[in-house]
Image 1 (cartoon, rainbow, N blue to C red):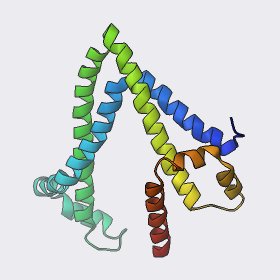
Image 2: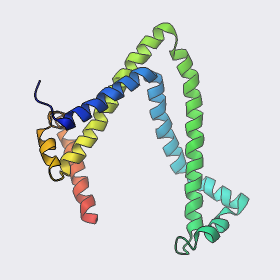
Image 3: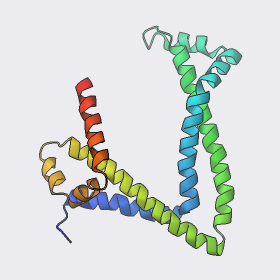
Image 4: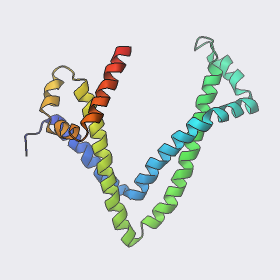
Length: 185
């Protein structure tokens, strides 16, 4: 095995931790957790403004928030923004709670003796994939934005080099996004 530096150990820890966490939680919980986030963000984005409008209609919330937040936020129409944010949060929490309830019912079935083994192994595999994905994104970000003496660790990292070879096109895309973002600042 090649010489590993401190950054390598941190990145390998992330992959190992994700794998162990996936094993402990199981495939069913991992999939439902991912599904809960995706569905809750989708529905909150779609329905959040409608819920915010309904809150305003029922409780005159927008006027109250304009009065309360206006002086703090420069007297612009902060109430509409705040009610939309509140609607987003309410829908997000409700959808997550609903999906978590369904997950707990399905997870109960996944704890049966034979199913449990496959559930845990599948969870470990999905956890590994999630860990590698996180490490890829972190590696792409730190490689694209080297900082001072930390550059030596990045350039000498076996894990960064190996992980970025998984998808050079995605790495280049992330690099371009960073260049565009720094140009805006």
